[in-house]
Image 1 (cartoon, helix red, strand yellow):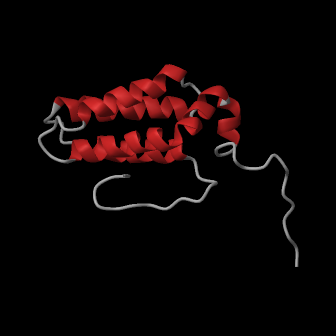
Image 2 (cartoon, helix red, strand yellow; image 1 turned 120 degrees about the vertical axis):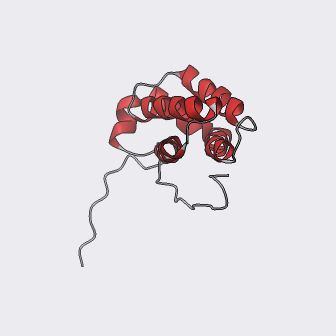
Length: 127
């Protein structure tokens, strides 16, 4: 689940951490701030995902994200809190190894997307 009422299809070359951070930035920006779980949780998730994406994450950040999203879901007045928590939960549930790769390979994660891309250098095809 990547939000409320929509879905996005990615190919295998896209960075799940980067896209999850982008979703979280949106929901943090859209939060009205009335509910503490949403106001504080979306901002906190955005900061943690930023750390992971830019090579400063720690292994425990992944579990921290899981805990934060769990405390947001079902604890807000409007559905924005749930919609903010679901993409994070789904990304960790299905792509935890990519989050771990960002922690283990911070420099490499800055140079390319997730480690599924071949190590070979591809030459451009000329016609």
